[in-house]
Length: 134
Image (cartoon, rainbow, N blue to C red):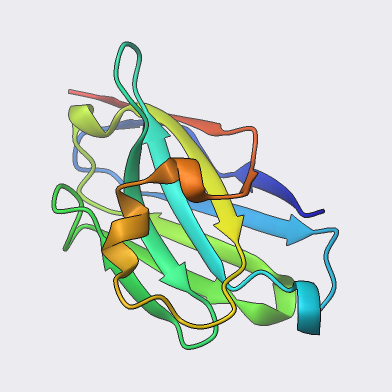
């Protein structure tokens, strides 16, 4: 069983930046290691949507169109942590941001498919709030 803990949320003005962190623990390497992690967000009254995902075995990533060019997902294997660097934030980025993860036996052919289907992610954190004011 894996545990995910997010941090780094907060309140910023439009145009500002934040960096979210997701620290993973509770799993071992080899058979059980997590190799796919992502960030999802949910605003009040809206469905949960994918923001960015990363296949940690080769660092390939995929972004939602709404954040492409503004957000960057990255990993630090030594710290078992995935980051989401968010720049040029907009009020519409306001949401609860969740980290999620799962394990693949081999690299998926379409990372974006999983970005659009958060229900297939096995492990979830508790979320961190991001609020962007205009």
